[in-house]
Amino acid sequence: MSGKPVLWLPRRVSDSTIARAHRNYDVIVTETDMPGTADEIVAMSAKADAMMPCHSEHFSADVVARLDPRLKIIANHSVGMDHCDIPALKARNIVVTNTPDVLSDATAELAMLLMLGAARRVVDGERLVRTGSWDSWSPAFMVGKQVSGSRLGIVGMGRVGRAFAAKARGFDMEIHYYNRSRLPEGLEKGAVFHETIESLLPVSDFLSLHCPATPDTVDLMNSRRFGLLPDGAVFVNSARGALVDETALLEAIGSGKLAGAGLDCFKTEPGGNPAFAEFNNIFMLPHIGSATAKTRDAMGFRALDNLDAFFAGETPRDAF
Ligand code: DGY
Image: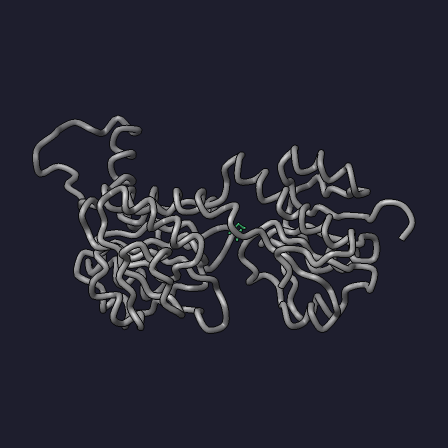
């Protein structure tokens, strides 16, 4: 390859990421900052040696089949990989990387916010004050569910799950978890391992999802599983919308089985599920788990580290 490799940035990543990218690459930035469509991705694959997409750009088998052979690496600016058909990309010899570790704290922070917000009725309370309709107070007013000392169930004890557990320990929570395999003691840090989700749910006064979306985890939380939670449990999802049967969640909220839910992820994104808006005990945010300035830089730099390694002839640290 003569000259710098060409790198396409479909989304508006951080200024520091763009500045660093210019050092080693001829950078094409899509200034509109809209999700890259299938046709755009295919067209750009003929102009770029590398891409740094986000979870908003979908590399389905159909798209991958149409990619130009010029494209050699997709260095994702995300930890989640459910937007990429990895086997199809591997079959085309396209290297794929992600950005683990660097967003764990920001995402765990947001999960904590969702858990606290849902438990302490933040939607109701914030609206009352904001709209000027807060006109009384009593000991019976806006009573929520106490997080401190409660039992927390975590599904998926990877990096984000463990970062969340670390923060929850600060609230003296009793931590239980389900994971495909049990963690070594040093990582478990006293959390109680459950071999099945079914065994975890009945002890989860609060339940938080931290596992990836794969064909095996679609609708992992369905009506039967919501039914296994203690009455008045609070459900948190900062992982992926695909993990939840949203009709079942609405039923669990509507019936009073759940005291509340905190959601940062939805089946349909952007947009979410308008039916959730009927319920003030569902506290919702627009998929912003990793959206802090520090983490956005770290994600961009990690993606660039992967690209730099690849173009130096090495195997990138986060290659699949
Ligand atoms: C991730 O990195 O997977 C986050 O959901 C943001 O894309």
